[in-house]
Every structure is written in structure tokens, then in C-alpha cells.
Image (cartoon, one colour):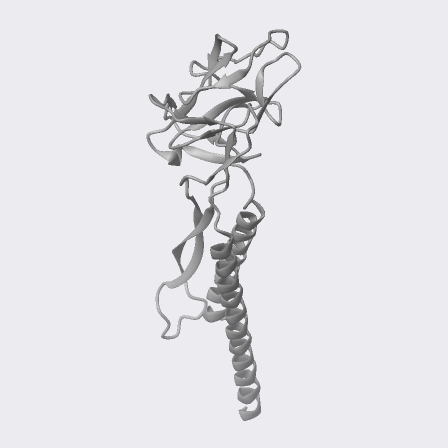
Length: 246
């Protein structure tokens, strides 16, 4: 296999990875609080397979990680009392079996003990890191103020915490629409959060842009395949002609 085929193969591997990311974006176009992702690439120098007059080093294509756009998604009204959306920067903090996680998905409920949780049962933290518990035996409408304060009737029972990081690069995706603090940064409570009761933040994925990008990447993959096939045919024909001359 010569240099062109090696470079083409590295390009195909990256394009396949990008197709997977685009497909995941499209699949999560309706996921609450999902943030669109894109693949970053880099040049990877490597020794050439053929040394006769070729460039040194050969530039391959490499996967350089996934970039995530944390831009605001559109807010959708649901009028459900436990649905809340962060309007602006910040994340809800939840406690899972694996530890603390962060999310923009505010589709909450209460468990059998009255604790405010995610749909998966992860406990939602208040602004001090504790729990928020609703008393099912107490009458009174459950309201959530714009600053996250939760009240049951006239009694304040807690405040939903909204936390932020100095750099969003601290967050790594762990699945289930959750993020983990993978750095030494400390999450700090947003001083003046804007929490909207009865609303959910939608995904910031633009399906049309993603489908367009998928078509572009698919065509690039096909063109690379054609280039590699032509290069392989050229090499095979050259060897056949050289054999006849000898």
C-alpha cells in the first residue's frame, strides 16, 4: 500500500467518525437541553511508505476530539409545574450513583419520598448542594420563581441550584444527557439565575444544517474511495506493465 492509500484510509476513518457524530446530533434534535457536537481534525505527520522523492513527512488526517456548542436552545412551553429551563448560562446539578453530574435537561419529577429528581431518578441539588423535598401531604400550589426558589403554597422549601464553570472545557459527556466535571475547576452557583417554570429548553441542533453536512461528508467519503480505487488500479497496471517489460 503506497502513501496515497495510507492518507486516503486515514481520511476515511475521520469521515466515518464525523458521520457518527452528525447522526447522533440528528437523533437528539428533540432531546431536552442537548448540545450540538462537531468533530475537530488535525494533521498527523508520519513516515512515508515510499521514500523515493516523496515528501517528508506524509501528512495524515487525525481525530482531534469533539467540539460542543453550549449555545442556548429554544424554550418550549409545557405548563408542567416541575418542568424548568435555564434561560442563560448554567447547569442543574444532580447526584447520580456515579457521583455529581450536570445537565440542562429540566424535565423533573418527584420520587416516592418527595425529593425533586430527574426522570432517571437522579436527585436535583439546591443552591447549597442539598436536596429539595416536596411534602405530598401539604396542600398548596408548587411554584418555582425566576431565581429558582421553590415554594409550596406560601412556604419556601428550597432553591434549585444553577451552577457554572469558568471554562466549559471542564465538562465531559458521560451519557444520559449528563456532563461530568473532568477538571480541577470548581462549579460556582450563578448569582442571578433565570429559571423558567413550565418550560423546557430544546436541543440547539439545526436538523437542516446537520443533514446538509451529512451529505457533504458522505460525498467526501465516496470521493476518497474513488481516489483510492484509481490509485490502486494505477499501481496494479504499472506492476503488470513492468512484468511484461522484464
